[in-house]
Amino acid sequence: MVGMLAAMPRPATSPSPPGDASARDRGDACPGTLRLHRADDGALARVRVPGGLLTAVQADALGALAESLGDGELHLTSRGNVQLRGLGPDCGAELADRLGEAGLLPSARHERIRNIVASPLSGLDGRGARDVGPWLSELDALLCAGERTADLSGRFLFVLDDGRGDVDALGGDVTLLAQDDGTALLRIGTARTTLRIPGAQAPRAALLAAGTFLDRAPGTGAWRVPDLPGGAGSLFDEVVRRLREAGPGTVPTEDRACPRSSDGPALGLVTGPQDGAALSVGIPLGRVGPAQWRSLTETARHRGSGELRLTPWRGVVVPGVERQRAAGLLDELGAAGLIIGPDSPWTGVGACIGRPGCAKSLADVRAQAAAAVGAVGPLPVYWSGCERRCGHPHGDWVDVVATPDGHRISLVRGEDRGAPVNVPGSPGGLAAAVAAARRTRG
Image (cartoon, rainbow, N blue to C red):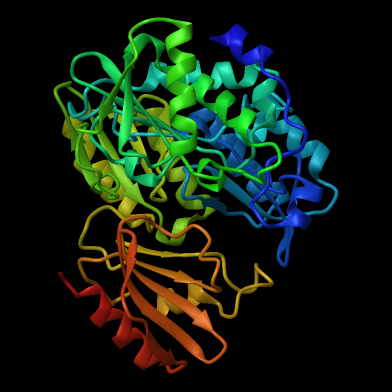
């Protein structure tokens, strides 16, 4: 399959969204660590962290870079990556050198396409069909080794689900779902039909599917699978054909893997069949300060296995802590201002960067979210400074969007959006409206 992928012709143009001529002309403008984005609060770097997996040493390096070159904080994304904000205009060379020394920039040509999310608790809690860690390592290595893969856009997403259905719900372009019988289901886009393949071949099959997408992308303006004319359906049959040519063992099947859930790991103590435990914490608004980050990294280094797992729900998992010490360590992280359980008023609250960091934002939505943080309820709530809704969650959630006259609040149920309610700019009225929306059921 690798030889087949390497032999595929290069696309004539970089993938871009359909109908956007200016985007096609300039190519994929998704930021990375070598291509910084100019924001209102300075330059922005997006550091890809495949599977959200960081060693304590790498975590130290990110924290030091945020303090010495940026605004001091690390901003977690909805793909388990890290953004550094407030960077100076001339820091690019130093940033790249220091990330490279920490092992966070293994390939300059591929750094923006290492978009892989994985089930954060895989191998820790006894759930799931298999530990997807080996898939993660192999797929990342294949992506970085391929000449052709560098043509993927910075938005193209690989998803590795251990069978519990958590990250499958995030809508990847190429998804692998582990099965109890040792096989894997390969999904293209959000299609319900999947391909059953041997588990050992799963990462290479994902690579082949991405190469097939690249063959279809030229002339379509497609950055991702849904952008293709015909979407995932137009790609599926060709992927089936190529996989069958590459080897036996591929069987199309209806998706009966497991129900999808857009919920991330439960916050608090994580236990499993092993002797150790893990700590699962949330980051208020996805923004972690220096002292909080040091608390996490020192816990991982001295009390855990030496690694941290960033989640697509803007949280952090610290594996490998002693079970008898876990409750006390969790309390220490809570004292540092992190979210350690479902009873926190911050649980389920998210927001884009808003003003003053984003010129398109109509409001300081992070400050507004903080002012309304007591508005608890079973539904998560996400505050957006404009209609783009950058970083919004999946599944069921309360959508709060700033408008020129105030805010618009609506309920999102999967693919369905309820009738919006327009709320003027009164802080008290806005908090009450958000609280009422979060309590809505059914």
